[in-house]
Image (cartoon, rainbow, N blue to C red; front, side, top):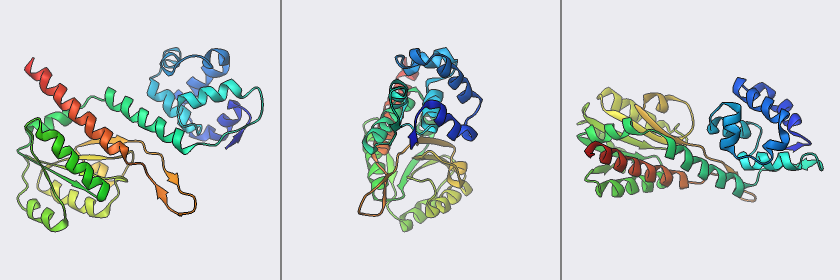
Length: 256
C-alpha cells in the first residue's frame, strides 16, 4: 500500500470507518506529535475507547498493529512511504494480540459449561486441529477433566447416537466453514448437547450453532513460488493454553 500520510490512508479506507474510528482519527490529527510517542493504552484513554478499538482502527488502515501505525506517524512527514506489510511482523503482532485479548476475556461461561458437562468430546477438522484437540485433552487431564477426542466420521456417528443435553462437544476449526463439521454440529444441536467452537474470527452457520466461541485473528501468508495460502497455527495452542489457565483460575475462585 503506497501512502504519503495518515490523511491519505483515512481517505482510502473512509467507507469502512465507523464513529469510534473517526473519534480516534480526530484526536490523532489534532495531536500528532503526542501520538508519535504514547502507548496504545494512553491513546485509548485520550480517545475514550478501549485499546482493542484502537487496534482494530490500526488494522482497518492496513497496519499489522498499533506500533506500526505509530511508526508511520513518526516518518510520514519526512518522505513518501512505501508501506508493505511484512509477514513476520504481521503475524508476531497477531500472536501478541491474541494473547492480550484472551488474557482479558471472561471465560466463566465456557468454564461452567466444561464443569457441568457429564461427557466432553472434541473434534478437529484437519491434521493440525486434531493435534490441538489431543493437546487440550492432555491439559485438562491434569485438572481431573476427561475429554474424549473423536478421530473420524464413523466414531462421531457412534457417540452422536448417545449424546444428551448434559454433554459438550468442542469443535476445533480454522475457517469455521468446514461443511462436515457444520453437519456434525447440527446433529449435536438436535440432541440438545452444548457446543464450544474454537476457530478464527468469522461468521457463519457453525458460529451460530455454537453456544460459546473462542476465536482468534489470523494473518494469512501468500507463499512465493508454491502457490498456496499459509495460515499460522500457533493460535490454536494459545487458545488451549488460556482456556486451561482460565479454568484453573475459575476453580480456584470457586474454592476460595
